[in-house]
Amino acid sequence: MTPITASEKLKEVDAVTVGVGWTGSIMAEGLTAAGLRVVGLERGRARYTVPDFQAPAIHDELRYVSRTAMTQDSTREPITLRHKPDETALPIRRWAAFLPGTGLGGAGVHWNGQTWRFNEVEFQLRSAMEQRCGRNFIDPALSIADWGVTAAELEPYYTRFEQLCGTSGTAGNIRGKIMPGGNPFEAPRSGPYPTPALKQGYQEVLFQRAAEGLGYHPFPRPAANLSQPYVNPLGLRLNACMYCGFCEQFACEHFAKASPQTTILPVLQKRPNYELRTHCQVLRINLDSTGKKATGVMYADASGRVFEQPASLVILSAFSLNNVRMLLLSGIGTPYDPRTRTGAVGRNYAYQTLSSGYVFWDKDVTTNAFMAAGSSGTVISDFSVGANDVGPLGFIGGSYMLGGASHARPIEFHPVPPGTPKWGRAWKEAMIRAYNHTGALSVSGSSMAAWDNCLDLDPTYTDAWGQPVLRMTFDIPDNDMRMSRYNTDKAMEIGRAMGGKAVVAEPVKKPFDVTKYQTTHNVGGAIMGSDPTASVVNKFMQCWDVSNVFVPGASAFPQNSAYNPTGTVSALTLMALDRIRTEYLKSPGPLVRA
Image 1 (tube, rainbow, N blue to C red):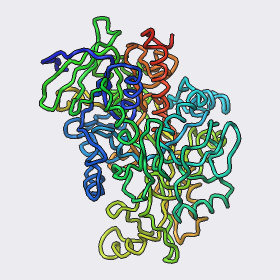
Image 2: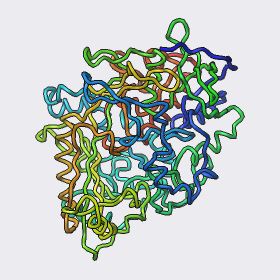
Image 3: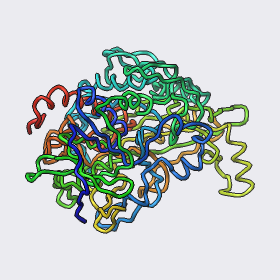
Image 4: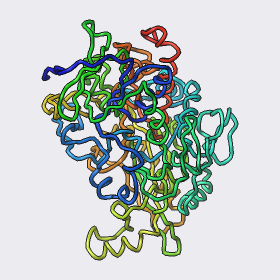
């Protein structure tokens, strides 16, 4: 690895955040409110709702979807992929399957706004499965683990994040009481969502009726696309969603989707003890001679000059994959070795297991799917983790099922019924006929960690700064294939009950296809836990090996839920922030003793 030397050593600050997305913004707001001097280092550019996200330019589907303009530059900072540890990894030169964000706000700008809570079983997954099904039930290829935290511990922090975002939804379980119209399988919450649920489109109504007819429990998807105007606890106003259909993979021009730009940054950036520096690529976290204390970071600015930024506290708040890479580049923790199954950094990488389908109606059913929010849709959680008995089914995990779509944009959305030619005039005519008479079904499945699925530094490829890129070793575990097949069949039963002329399933396939968009929900690699030999951070996101480095993000997940991660990522960040402020700042050192 090429040695890095700084041209200038800057004045020390109390804390530095590596990345200014959701976790970096949340941490910086709380630390500056406590009086600390904080520097936020963002590798991308500064960008704001006005003037950067305004229509019509922000609705450029070619730029933001086809050409992924809001993502990490894969020519300067790629990732390599292989499906098995004995294969040679090759670079992903064009993002498709997942979309790591870059620029101020990170992926919190182009997310779709789904704001889920995980249920209790998911946080105790290995223990719960062993108790329910026996130790021998767990596939020996899986490396699933308990989180070391409970849903009850996270509840107040879930609530704080939802209040920050103004999340729209219908509560299903308030203090143990099951509420009509909500998710009966969710963990108890202390109160309702800040704003009512979004409006339903017609295909969502049909899904709800069909699901209820089959005995399931449909409810509106929880959304950070607001159903009505709202002022959050920091005094920032958000507007009601206009259902424009340009949400996921786009920024919101209307201040109607919660993002760091709409919920935190306008307050944070006015504070004199906060400084944002953009176009700053962090290259390494510096350690002292003991290797047990961080002294700050090294970063390169837009002109290529390298600076040393000393700091008493380092918050590694980048995208989950980049969190893991930065730990490896900095020599923090023991790298994971899939052959010996030892080490922790890079272990338990997991993704998401998605399948889908379409319901085609005749012209008498008009769906108007183009009128949608990023989190539009009606869902059921009857097949989610912990909601049903998977013992007889032979898999661990689950899915939530969605009727509805977040968009029907002209380049992406062109479903056609079975028997349609793949191209030509007949395809065009079928696409035009089907466009406004089609409903989408989605099956969002969990992803179980496996011993062979991991992250490390590539031995061959380097980035624009001469440093090894991240290597991903991943394929879909057989357990997850079994789970997905079962749940996809159940979702298609609902589709047939919706009364369509045809229902077409699009099941998940192996090997993992990096060329087709699925989700940006990459998790693991710097997992949390109670055992320092098998985890990287404790329950407060604090590194076991270097106690003044905190790593909030989905990199802490020991495996992935069916639900989108942002709500849980932010709740964990808020819990860590709370403990930093109340305990760590008074007496710096480990917050949990191994």
